[in-house]
Structure formats: structure tokens, C-alpha cells
Length: 235
Image (cartoon, rainbow, N blue to C red; front, side, top):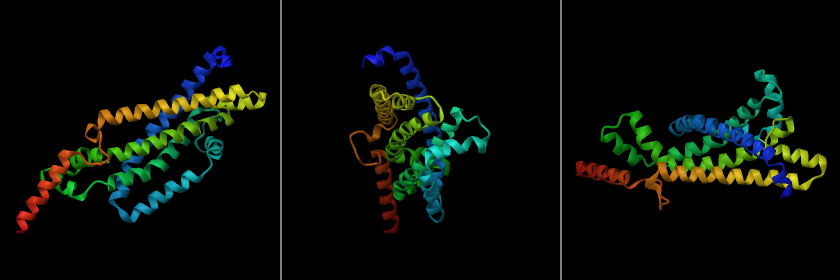
């Protein structure tokens, strides 16, 4: 890897360029997919349409989107914004289905229990549904991050600098080392982002540690108490 060390400034610059071109679409895609997925989970009649639209969007080749988007939104052909918008669309397309499944995984008994204890619709959504859907959402976000980091490299084909630029340059020069440096850089970035997501999940969702069950003990007890109360009332 002598070549990588000799060209470390260029490699690091491409690494950071690749990083922000990946992180921004991941964040935007997650933020947009959450409300869409929640809405889809609450409206079964529209669920198929929304999820189907996401599937259709994801089937569009990324290179085709990168090339046609400037003419649609009026940006320059080499503007990194084209890559960010395109990958945000792909992130939403992947994440919407996961978000819908995540919110549907929350037990109706838990939602009934929260309502019975005085939670408003908004409080229930933010304080109950979102935390309990968190583990599934995190799993989907990890998939989105890997996919996005990989797709960023395609942007190099239209001249947007990132680690994929090492692929195109190495291919033109028939220089395998440069290609391998780019590949290793992308793998390292994917592993780092994934590790940060796992760490964030452990910090933000401590109730999920050491358990594959999506519901925390407090909410299970709350649901159980509510079920017992209902049973007592019917008796």
C-alpha cells in the first residue's frame, strides 16, 4: 500500500467527500421515510401503493438518475447535489417498507395500554410507537447505509469526486492498486458508519440490549396491567 501512503492526502480528501455524500442522503432518507412508513402502517388500503411506489423507484438505475436529474431540477451536471437527491430517493425507497413493518410490529395491546393511561395520539406516537419500533428501524437504517455508501461510487462515472474516482482512474490506467485502495476505503467507511449506528442504537434504546424482543419491560408490564384491567371489567 505504498501508493496509498504516497497519495494519502488525495485518498483522505476522497474519503471525506464520499462520507458526506453518503451521510446526508442516509439522514434525509430516514427522516422522510419515517412519517411515510407510519402512515402506511395505519392505512392498509394505501400501504400497497406506497410500498409499491418505493419498489419501483429503487428499480431505476442510479446512473440514469444521476444523468437525467440535472435537466429536471436545473443543477449543473457535476453538482454533488444530484448525487445527494438521487441517493435520498433510493434511501426512502428502501426505508419506507422497513418503517411500515417496524410500526406494525408494535403490539396493539401496548398502544391500547398507552391510550388508557392518558397518552395523546402524538405522545403515543413519539413516546411509545417510535421507541418500540426503534430496533426494526435501526436494522433497516443499517441496510440503507450500506446501500447508499456503495451507490455513491457510481457518482464518479459522471465526474463527482469520491472514492469511486479511484475505480475509474485505476481502470483507465490499468492500475489495480488504486482500485483496491478505493474498495478498501469504501468497506472501511461502511464498517465505521455501521458501528456508529449500532452504538447509537445501544445509547438511544437501552431497553433493547441483550434482547431480541422489540418491546421493553416497562411497556410489556403496562400492556399486561391493561389486559388484566380489561379482563377484570368484563368479569
